Image (cartoon, rainbow, N blue to C red; front, side, top):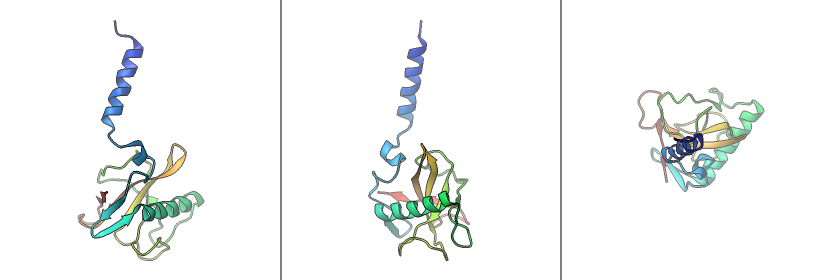
Length: 140
């Protein structure tokens, strides 16, 4: 007869195999060298800076720009992200940290409450997407 312990262990093993994202990547950018969004490449430092700014604004209940960033990212496109939601999106720029004005095409996505922390979960871009949709940036 199969014990409950065996069933639980088998279930956990299945989950571990079915979730291929490294723990480091699920909890931030430590496993990432850079991301490429269209023709723009962003370093880990740039990802961290944009995420930090987005997280601090979100925690303070503040926003920037006419589109009020950070704001909810609903992931209607079903893009692969490193954790489940909730998600917020915030612009990432090649010229520094977003402080208002035009957000450009590229965004970082963060989860403001992953295990009690605000963490980077992916990068997305309008470049190459139809309409106002997003596609994933390429992680290096």
